[in-house]
Image (cartoon, rainbow, N blue to C red; front, side):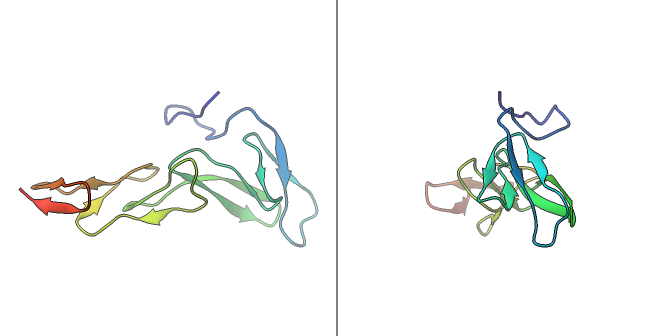
Length: 105
């Protein structure tokens, strides 16, 4: 069951556990764990620690993106942008994607 931007959790149904160095407890991941230090997050989201013992999936910042297979958010190319939590970038107004980069119309 895949997470959707209309839901509030950002997690899917599989279970795993992670912790930070010095943590007093483990955090439950619903989408499995990545080496015991970060939970897997859906496209457009990345794992972040809120405190020593608490973390969550957080949206990638504006002008970045993350696909399901990426481990971190990547910057959009020059002349492209994205909204928070995006899995891809779009060319700015007045431009189009020519399969390599954004170019003027």
